[in-house]
Length: 103
Image (cartoon, rainbow, N blue to C red):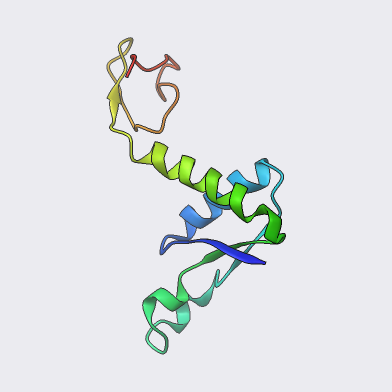
């Protein structure tokens, strides 16, 4: 098993787990409920961790994680059809389903 992702936000780790599983990569969340030990342990030591079951999946998992986090860093965009603000990672407008303007 190899550690491929850790984050203080439990939902971010679960999101990445779903991403990897959707690509056929078996993985496991550890420290899922360790936050109760904060104070006895350093905060970073209780962050949820995502581990891939097969060492051979590590490189592909990291590639998918890098792609996903790069999309999250994109600038927000405004829909040309309805004017709604959308997160940079959205491939379609959340309000009307229109595609984003060319970037």
